[in-house]
Length: 167
Image 1 (cartoon, rainbow, N blue to C red):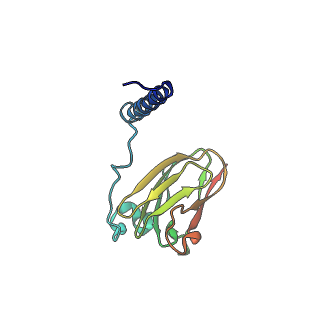
Image 2: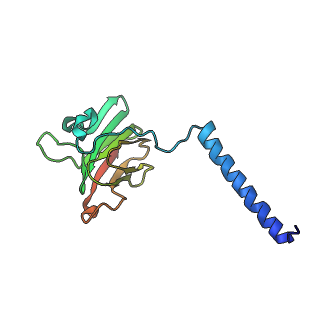
Image 3: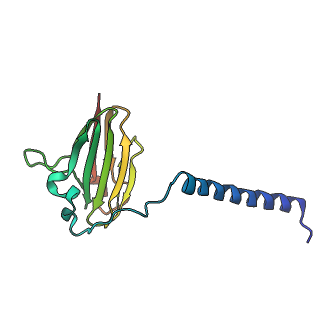
């Protein structure tokens, strides 16, 4: 079989690219231990209160040790439930000190939602029946908007809250 010089070059380039791609994926998966979120903890989306972290009194911000926080959130139709304040009003804003590590734990009771803290690397897809987790170090002070970046219905644009990082 006689291949033209340009065909041979493109064939070598294509096969080389494929081998390089598979080597990078293999390195990330086996050497670095990077895996997709297939080991996500599951939860009954109709009864999220049965799980301790998502009981009404455990929602929102909790300091677990000095400089480490956990934020438990239940996403549902056009709302991020961060719990209630001492007056019984819905919490729309959480505040953490600069440099703290924050573990966001989010689940949903209805449809697929997004959870993105704009301006940071916190970005998760939240699916019914699963608990999504993401730990981030809040390095820069400021106010960051939490938005749903997965279209979830007609009130999608109303689904937001705020994370304040202070000095």
